[in-house]
Image 1 (cartoon, helix red, strand yellow):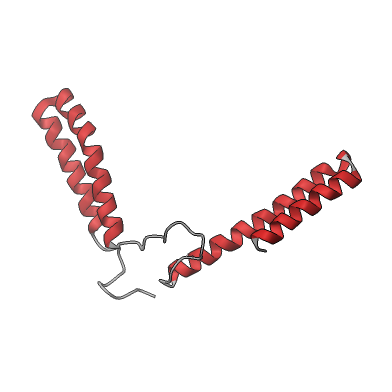
Image 2 (cartoon, one colour):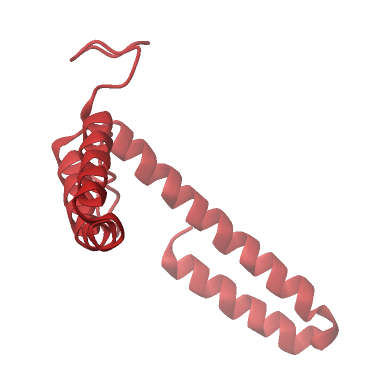
Length: 129
């Protein structure tokens, strides 16, 4: 169902509400919401399928879904941990001085190393199917 079809459905629902009265309003609204929900689910499924196949997203989509383990995902994760490192470093240093700072940075390095390693059961470049 395209956008124009949804607009026609909404117009038909509003017209039916005018003819039938307010006692059927709940059923009419529920029916229309189901149609919109079906449309949204279908579009999401198409986008996921396109992303899984490595193709471009469906028109109207905002951005492709990042592939797990891709450079973009790893880079984004590293940026987020560095941004979080600033307040965590301040808290660690304020509470336990140098030892607190060392513990915070050891945790940051450990999280990034764990995130950067390949998933278990996969050989580099080969999917385990």
